[in-house]
Length: 114
Image (tube, rainbow, N blue to C red; front, side, top):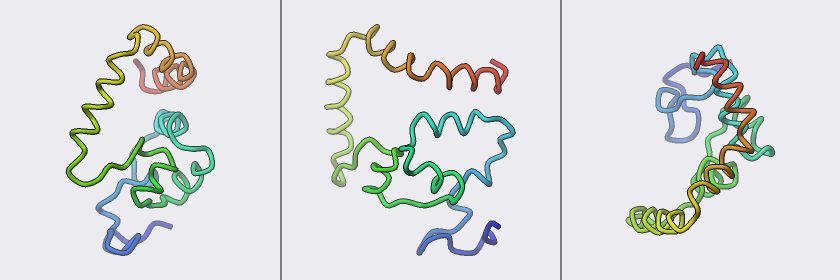
């Protein structure tokens, strides 16, 4: 059962501030495919079934974030990551990103009618 919209989900966080899977209006498995492609399998049930809210460091472990950087350092970190990606072969990078996700992409495309 979902809490009332004004009931706290977590100290300082209210239901209307988050969009757990139960509140999403998906009739397709596309949302689950997106999550299964990204979320650490050990965190999948807490994320999907229990709508667990994570602090930044735990969000990295769960798979929501790649890293947490100090306040004010996000632009520098993003530029460093972009520079590292720019040194990679674009074709190889695309293949390495898409090949493991081909099943999920096929399911999502079918479910979304694209």
